[in-house]
Length: 96
Image (cartoon, rainbow, N blue to C red; front, side):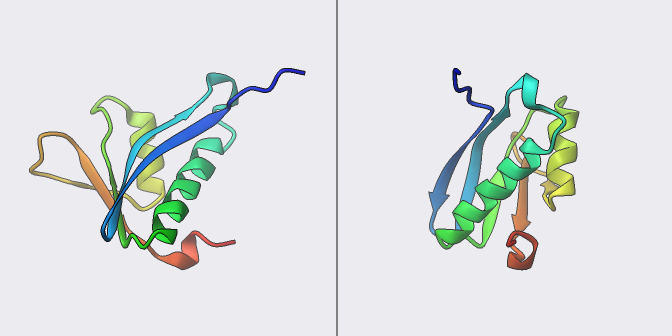
């Protein structure tokens, strides 16, 4: 049986904060919560490295991703060349 990558995240860590560079879920695995779990994993990783905040950007027409980010607590900030979103970590939300 051939293994297949279903999702991945790319992160950058800075002193006190992190950035979600990329998140992707294979089309065959979408709509099953894997995007939410991948984002939760990414938040946990940067938090474990000492980040207090996390930012990301997405395309203006990527409504699906924007809804996911909003459901996970990210809020849009204005006044940037591209959309930047950030969330202040509440560790109780991201621990099992």
